[in-house]
Length: 396
Image 1 (cartoon, rainbow, N blue to C red):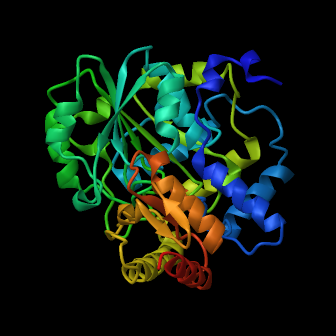
Image 2 (cartoon, rainbow, N blue to C red):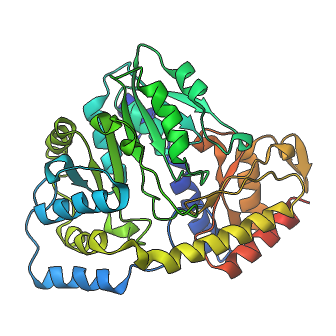
């Protein structure tokens, strides 16, 4: 069917590059090619047994009816306690909305907050869907570039420069996908001094990777000063508990925003999966110490990958402090010919590595930084060693 029959909205929408690269990797694997995928942000661990048992019990207990649009009260109460315990954030159950993944939470917030032509400041690099979600809501993403030299973090001066009379929101992600950067309390306090001058700008804080953090502490920007009054904190159980397929995310927000998100969700998906919600109660009630072995494994892999990347001439790398990605600067290869292939940009290099090294990565262009590529280390150490052996060979 010709795309002229489709809406301008969908024709102008960019395809998710992480999902597109994962699809290409699967196609090659189906052809019998040994592809190592470093493209998807998905833990290679399985959901903990105690959470599986909770899901099974929910089936036995006949949780098969429509749940409330904003989530079961027991779950929202558990999330409220979790916010206080882990983040020192006070969100009452009526300020919490449970959705089909943190991605829907972001989509809901964008559509209830942003009017056409309003601007959203997004530090780059950013997760691939941020800018597209803002655009779908009619907003204008205002990207603030950072570099490996600044550890991919924006400064207060950069934030001040990006704000205009049209600025409605700023979106943060810490720990960050794709850079792994983690903002400290002091860094957030410095940014908050700028935001204090603009009381009508709202903050969205994506904290989905909060527990995969190697710094020893996680700071939620909503704890700074009185920012809680205009901060929407987004989280979920996909990454920390290896529950990506359960599709549960949630927000804590000022009540009027939470009610608006419930109103919108009621016309789109209604309540999230009932069985997954019951399992999520068990997850958020669990002490985060149950995750220490997984976090320790990710830190060990991080150190391995940073070491292997440092052995490749022409690759610049910082040491990410959270999540499970590295985001090396590969711009030194642009303009060069590798094994007969001209590399013009990060797109070319990412495709080159897929075709020549059989390793799937994602171009940094998709994350707002055209000098880098993203690699996930959410796979085994043996797979990582082999992947970077291939990459090193291909980049000679």
